Amino acid sequence: MADVLPKEHAAHLAKLLAQDKLILFVGAGISHQAVPRSASSERMPLWAELSRAVANEFLMDSGAYRDNPLDLFDAIILKRGRDKLEETLRKLLNGENYGLSDAHTSLASLPWHLVYTTNYDDLLERALECNDPIDAPDEYERLNDSNRSGSPLIHLHGTTRNFRTLTSSDYANWKDKNQIAYNYLQNHVLEKTILFVGYSYSDPHLSQGLFPWLRDIKRDRHIRHYAWMWRASDEQKLLLDQRDKIEVVSIDTDADWARSFAQLADAISSEARPLKGRSKATMRVARANDQVQINPFKLFYFRTKKNISWSQLAQEVGLRRHNFRKFEQQPTRDSRGRLIFPSIERSALEAIEARLGCVGMLGAGKEDDLMATYTMYYKANHDIAKGEKIKARVEYKELGRQTSAVIFDFGGTLTQSQGLKSTWERIWDSVGYKINDAGVLHADFTAGRITHQNWCDQTCEQLRKRSFSRHHLKQIAENIKTIPGMEQTFEILSNRGIPIYITSGSIRQIIVEKLGISLRYVHEIKANEMHFDEKGIIKMIWGTSFDFEGKARYIGRVCAERRCEPMDVLFVGNNLNDQWAARSGARTLCINPGETNYTDTNIWTYSLKEVRDLQEVLSFI
Image 1 (tube, rainbow, N blue to C red):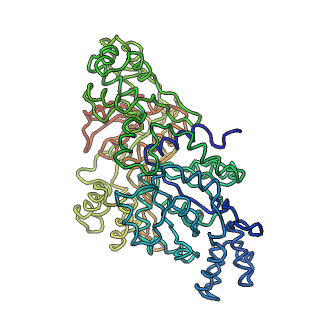
Image 2 (cartoon, helix red, strand yellow; image 1 turned 90 degrees about the vertical axis):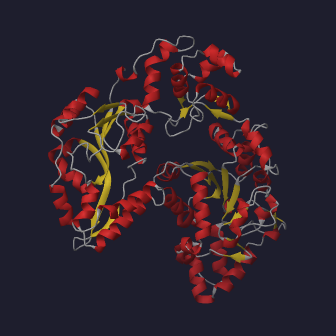
């Protein structure tokens, strides 16, 4: 019988399970698999069926609410009261009328880090043998109990004993009323990987709750989660992949639920599987022998810098020479364009790192996987310095290359120095604030106490208090001068067929105005946007997702669009917030440096301490 899950998908989830990193989110489709104890009983209802059944009990028309149970439940509460609604739901969702399905027993055999459910019934409690599920805010602290065994179960919206979230009104202020639950959910979304099962695209728990919350939590962080979704169309899968970074596998028959869990169980290697009930110490031992991934670019860089051959390193760490041929082989890409790095035992990786003096640096799957320092050095030297040949090396900056795109910062890169004050500091200063007032929020962001959008929101609040207006912004823009040679440089790049992008922490309106006729050469601009009310007073700052660490993500997006390697992109910047670009693997050029160490070749591939005409950068393209 053919597998339900793509093999690569199953293998990846199995690895996450073995590493105690996978959280399960269970929807109504799994309860629907439960086996009726009586031949005359119907199956546990799905949302549309539940909506119609409840409407019949109250002599109402569910179609009037487009079979949306959350709106229907609001209407019932307004007419008959919440107690009557809950009494009806307890009768319709009584788990005692059902036995466990194969899907329940299969999922219960797997070592989930945690199990969430939006179902109200007790079927998962029985399957997981969990006598103390979490269904109230004051119970979440039990997740910190190190003596817990098995997979903890959280009823996010309550149980038939204690319905907590039932209606559209409940959802409207859920985060405010359930701050503890939301904080835990936020941490799990950011630190673990989630697999959604038992949901359909139309499930109100997804559309009105989980997916909007995920988007709010992740914002533009490139964090990927997964879903096994009932009969998902190609269009739905594409939307969820591109908008929400959720990889969807369609489940097309009821039997496929249990088969999917069974396939996942088969994919877990016996030696790496942290079985339910093991102590945490035993699980740590199992994970210590896991297969991990090694970065060939970094291994080659640090090995040859130490003048150590394959044979020498193999002898010193207890491996065979041919292993290093595999470890330093250039990564390939899978069907989705993701890099496939070589596998290695964790203990072997740690031994190599210790010998080369780069502890914690050689593992793959990190933000600096494709840093130009390593990839360019690898490309320049791999063919002449692999194996036992370790002496002949080429300076990677001299490597010939092609340029598929150029990405510029704006402030201080495409503009002339404004002295000691940045554009943002001039904005605060224009309505009477001190520079230190602006610095407080900057420090909070740098320390991770607030997000970038929080920073923008609080800045907007302070500026609005003092009536910062379009007029203020226009005056600030008038005093900004672009660097000489910008139009000529853009024209030359355009004639060469090299697209120009701008990603900046400045203000989009200022960038557009100062580019003038050069705007016609620019493919795309990503920057913060100011919005004003009908009186011209600031009302919102829409923060860019592509400043600071977001610059690396933006470069990755450009590479995907241009279908090129990061090394084929040149990023030109000048300041502290531009340093993140190096993590993308793009070549980086620092010009007229501000608050950055332009001599650090791990950050800047090239540097020009003083540039008076932008055409000077053309020699690096």
